[in-house]
Image (cartoon, rainbow, N blue to C red; front, top):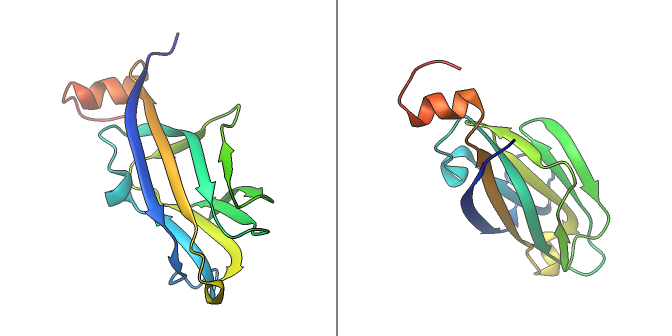
Length: 130
C-alpha cells in the first residue's frame, strides 16, 4: 500500500516561449530547481490551469509529450494516473495562443511522493543508489 507525502504546490505564470518549441506563444516551464523534489521519484497528482479563452495546451516531460488538453482556460486536471517525474526532469506546458493576446496562462501543480518506494526511502535515509 502506498503512503503518499505531500510536497506542496508550485505556481508559475506563462512567459513568451524561449525553448524554441513554441515560438510566439506562451510557455510555462517547471525546471528542476522550481520543482525541487527531495526524493528521486515523485509525481504531479493535480494541476490547475487558467489561460486565454479558447486556448489549448500540450504537456511535455523533457522532450516527451505526456498529454494535450483542449481546454487551456479555467480548468483543473486530476488524472486517474498521476504524472511520474524523476529528479532532474523539466515539465513544460506549451499554450496554443500567441503572446500578443496579453493573457499569460497560470499553472499550479501539486506534487507528492510515495515514501514506500525503495529509492525514495533510501534517499530520505541518506543511503546511496536507486
